[in-house]
Image 1: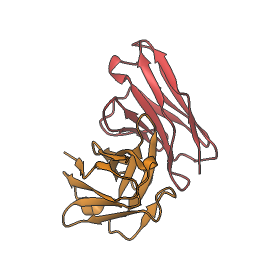
Image 2 (image 1 turned 45 degrees about the vertical axis):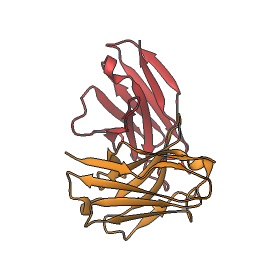
Image 3 (image 1 turned 60 degrees about the horizontal axis):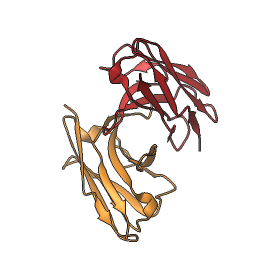
Length: 120
Length: 106
């Protein structure tokens, strides 16, 4: 069974940093591109960042570019999101999601999410 | 960025047929996908490539469309289909999501 389990969320003050992790199991992690997607309370979904299977290709949403860093450790089956200079508008549930079909950019497996609250 | 517009909410009775629409601000070819998100849960992929049913998803769900206008159909609707349905396009960078359609089963 494919499983993605996020951790590392919490309450953080504006301007501070936080690092999220996503532990993958049930599939060959190193074969798949991965993503972070967030959902602000009561809102829709927003793509945050993507990383290819070998980390060769990395992309960020303009809203987080220069502040967030996506990375992965294929030996540990783990995806990361380092978040710095956090703002109140970064408050959201952060999902780790696997890229599925190679022809279309779709997310075919999602974690339960890690809650991040940015507040003083 | 490509903006995806969805109706905010729909209410239908069990056994009925429901269509949920998604309109793109520019062509996305067939790069449109649909997700279901039940309250308190993560999104679940239903349809990819506009009309391809994800493995394990009931055949009651179907998708159609190309270019700028897309539809997710559920026929017949069941009580368990209460959820918010999001469309997502992957044709244009960055990929974007619609704001979601909340489906209520009366």
